[in-house]
Structure formats: C-alpha cells, structure tokens
Length: 339
Image 1 (tube, rainbow, N blue to C red):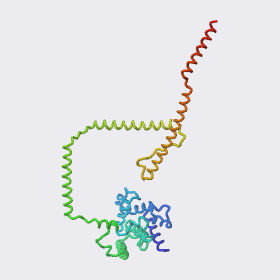
Image 2 (cartoon, one colour):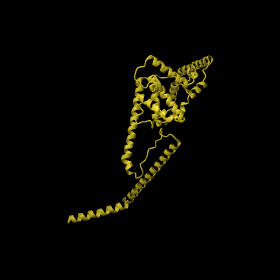
Image 3 (tube, one colour):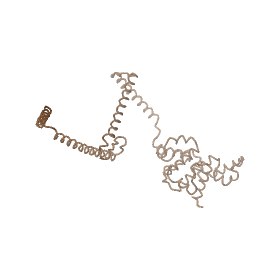
Image 4 (cartoon, rainbow, N blue to C red):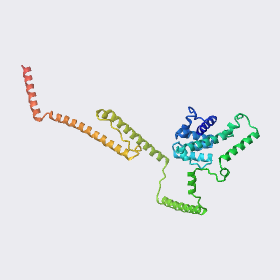
C-alpha cells in the first residue's frame, strides 16, 4: 500500500472514531474527493473540525457564509491558532496547493483533533494501546505514552520552533499586514488627541452659532402623527389608483390589442449594468412603437365612421323636400277619409 493510501486510510479511521457526521455515503476511495475538492462540504468539514476542537470557534465562524472572504479569513485565523504554523492557508482553502501539501495539512489537523479528544496520538493507539484503548491506564503507562508522544513531536518538528517564545498565531498574510502597521508612539497619540479635541471645540461652536441664528420649531407629537397619517393615506390612495389602472388596462385595453403583451420596464434596482439599461430602454421604445401603431389603427377606424356619418346626414334641402312629401301624404289621407 502506498504512503498516500495509508494516510487516507488513517484519516478515514480517525474521522470514524471521532463520529464525523460527513462520512455518510463516503468510503476510503471517495474520501480524497471530500478532502481535496473545493466545495461547501469541504468547508463544512473544516468548520466541524475546528469547532469540535474548541466550541469557542463555533460562535466565531457561525454568522458568516462559506463563499465570503470574511468567513475564509476567520477560518484561516482559526487554523493558524490551531496548528501554530505559518503555512499559506489561503492556497489550501482554495484548493490551489499541491495534493501532497493538502494531505499533510489534513493529516496534522485530524491528528490534533484526535489527540485532543482521546488524550493520545492515533499512532500510539495503533502500536501500544490497541488492546487497552477502552481500559483505564495506569500512571506509569500514561507517563511513558506521554514521553513517547513528546519524543515523536521532537523528531517530527524542530525543538527550537516548539519551545520558542515567538509563536506565530496568524498566517503569513496577516503577519505581513500587522508588520506594515507599527504601533504609534505616545507623542503621536497625544498630538492626535489634541487635534481631535480642537476639532470638537470648533464643531461645537459652529453648532451653537447655527442654533442661535436659526429658529427651530419644536414639533409636537400629534402634529407628526397627523402628518404621518396623511402621508399614509396618500400612499394608499396612490396604490388604489395604480391597481385601478392595471385592472382597467387588463379588462378593457388589453383585449383590443392584437400585438404582443407589453412588458413593464424594470428601471430601478434591477438594472446592474449599462447593457441592461440599454436593453430596458430598447424595450420601452418597442412598446411605444406598438402603442403608436395601435393608436393609429383606432384613429383610422374612428375617422372612417365619422366620414360615413357625415355622408349620411340629412341636408337642409333634402329636409324641405321630405317635409313637402309628408304634407302631400297627409292631404291625400285627409281627402280619403273626408269622402
């Protein structure tokens, strides 16, 4: 079995013993996908490891989204505190680091959590504690196991780095930013305080002069309430007018239009780019052209109807002739009945 497979097998067994909730439908062959692919499940696993090690980190990471830069910075800070290393965690989180570095990172991280949870390293539990892992250790055995663990740490890391007072609690990027911002001297702080004090006095004097020159009327509560009530009524009235217009359009105008349905332009917060703005204004122009075409169509119909009515109206001469014909008919009828 290769070294890569041995470490993956070791990580899988340790996560199982720690009752990791993310191993459902995950086996040893699919574990590298979970560890190395940059996705939400990988961030959740990292968050679970950090928060299981110390519940204080849970509140520290809770209110942030996985895709935000703030969450990644918080996670980098937590990993720096947990691993006490100056590794570039930004590449590890983004998945840009080599597979070897990512495998070493996960091995160290899971080993720290395992040791913190059970009180001994996983390697020691496999070699010396396999038969007694569920039994209580005697003081001598515990002391020997602790010595072996310290010896393994010393052989793996440099003793100078382990016992150095200069502990790197932050990653390389945060350390570089902290070095760029030196702590100001006491003289600089005093000068800044004096300047702020002078500015405060100046602004206070300006405010007092404004208060003296302007007569502010103190608003009473009932006046403010009346104004708010009137404003609320105006908004409700406007809403009713808009609803009535929409209803009238849908019930009366829309049924006469053979053209495609008009789309309202979402001018406002929905426009996020110049392209969207141009597209919306082009839509407005198209809708206006449709409206113009429909208007001309109805105008032509009305003109024809008016022309027909004008042609069929009775003229004064025709009215006189009609009146004479009616009189003749009346006379003939009267003569008929007089006989």
